[in-house]
Image (cartoon, rainbow, N blue to C red; front, side, top):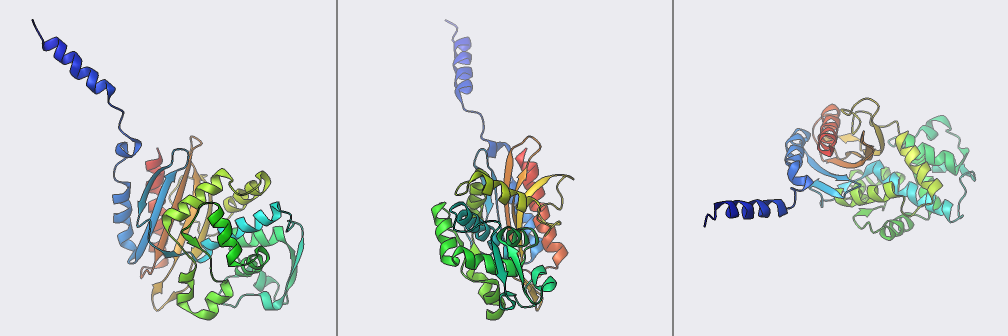
Length: 299
């Protein structure tokens, strides 16, 4: 009896029953690419990437703590919108911004520069200032209206996000010195989880979810970060964060966001560059290169 054809059939059957290689196996090397790109930062880099429709994730220093700087305005904005949904606040409700509310000169604030004697603005206008222009005064006023850091952290925990902590206001960061900003921290993987909640609209009504994504997409800050090396016209809903540079050390250069891929899927990207001695162009280029590597990996 000739058993060779039978053996071939059996071997073929075994191979046919094997599952196809995972998407991660088909796209090796993203973590290694991030590591190589990160060397230019001359500091600490944390990054995390997720294809939101599948949950497929790659991270680099994903569980380490990084100062958020203005990235923390994203959970503040979400908490304010939750209060709007609960009818505790109204988008068209007017809020008086007093001179005492204006953040110091070291913090970025178009509101302070435009209205040095104070102004009355709606909650909607304050949200736009905070999310689109990253205004520090708007952030502190909205954080107060939202119920303070405790309420923001409660909202985050309700979403199942444990590794993002809001603790200090913009004024406190300026007054308390360079190290206070480390109190507002996140891990890349936890921020990735928050971005997934953003994409899915969890914790917010449909109108609030749409407004949040609109404001993040219209953000004018950090055009050379996540967006920097992506194809022209790529849609990115994001929030940046940047510290001042002191004695050649920049403690935070960040960007986190959701990229819409050409096929309609969504890619969440988190990049924190911390304690860096590289110049601004290099730090932003690190973020842009990681985002581009993630874009290429997303296909």
